[in-house]
Length: 623
Image 1 (tube, helix red, strand yellow):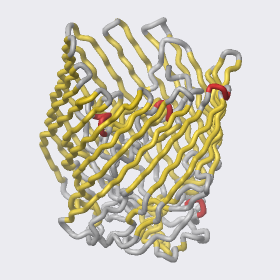
Image 2 (cartoon, rainbow, N blue to C red):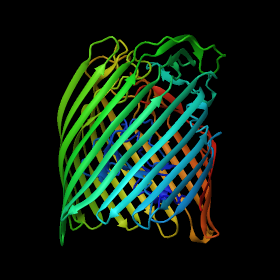
Image 3 (tube, rainbow, N blue to C red):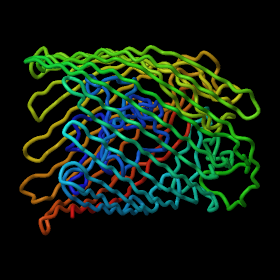
Image 4 (cartoon, rainbow, N blue to C red):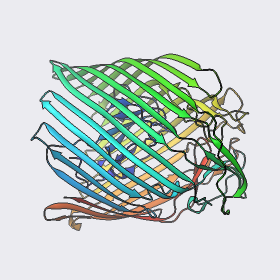
């Protein structure tokens, strides 16, 4: 029952340490924007209830989706049509067959506060139920603006006219607005970054950002008779941005001085239609179950970008600057990008008496991209890719499971950064491949260990010597990942894991300031420990702990300088209780208890600071 929110708990819901999102809580080594050193969302590796989805919004709607599972390693072995660099599988807030209403009130971090109402109601006893979510949030985007506001609504309908058919239409809309924007700090690729605090960067009160995002779709499940069934999804995703202000601090020097540029893009939009149709034939025997899946999928994506008004405001110190007048704006014609992609696939999966599994798949993808750059002829690129996948698990002993897989894909990459002359331009999809394998050991029903290795190969995009964002070469990431979980009867749950990553670059053309062979962005070592302790004798009281450690990571294109290691500790307490036979919970979380200071940097050299010690109070009621 998704409308019940008082007991939301990402730690107890997690089956491994590789990434779990439940409501407003996120834990694990990976997320929809970071898995094995890459970005699954940017790569178009997002699914809704397992079905192919092209997400164009800046994030997935927290009102529409109750949870997210990261499909990497063994979690992807029985998954039909997996993708390299992981899959973020979104789960809808599908309403149940009984009435329910929950409210969630949040104060923090910093000045953020929000109110959310999550409700579901059965219009008929079993066949038709409706879920509705609304949210109002203030100062939610504290990492990017001093003042922000969000208003959103979503609805999910579950219609089951017969025992063999179910239809789930859904829609969400969110309006977002912010002003007094925090500048984007770009490293100069040569010198080490100075330490800074984003909350204290000099800002201009007249800068603003506004955007609307909507997601809609219909999921259909039909038993066709006999061994045949059908699952289908048709989705739309839209992001509309107003005339916004990107405050850029480019090429920051060790003394904190940067080039101050105001980048104002005109209004722009990104819309995608995507769909996935699967026909499944199931077959079972006493010790055997198999599924043959035939799929047809596709997407149509249209985006506008470019035409920005650029104003050079001179040098500035990231530690302080005066008020500036808004610059005069001069726009140029925009560019347009259109992608049409279709695929036909076949996947065979078999389970042998819980002793072994086997998955073999083949997806033939046709990709066409039309790019209309302002003032230049239309370019039209076409690609056909044959994408095989193979995976297996086997149990040589009852508590031991071995797994392995090989996957090929055709994936998108990060759009061109603001410092590029083709800023905002989406790169074409490029081939990728991945091989992984490992072992899972279940010592007891409540204790599980996993260790695996992987090797991923993708195209690498960066700035060439004339500042054009283009394909520079390729990147290979080898690594080890581990997970340990304990869910004991005494109320103690532990989810811990680590990733050891070794990314390497091969350049085919020169990159601006790029002479090293280690890419900027991926973290060589990440450790995470999450603990939830709720002993029965404590009468609803519980404690939580989250410890995260990042190793030193490269911050310049020549590999000479590294950001220092960064370790943070979050702790929390909560009280779950009943009142008038209704469930309530009150939770206080203290993030970054030790007030650790540090920086992170992404693949396009944008640096962000670690949020200093902050407090969040959450109150949830199932009314």
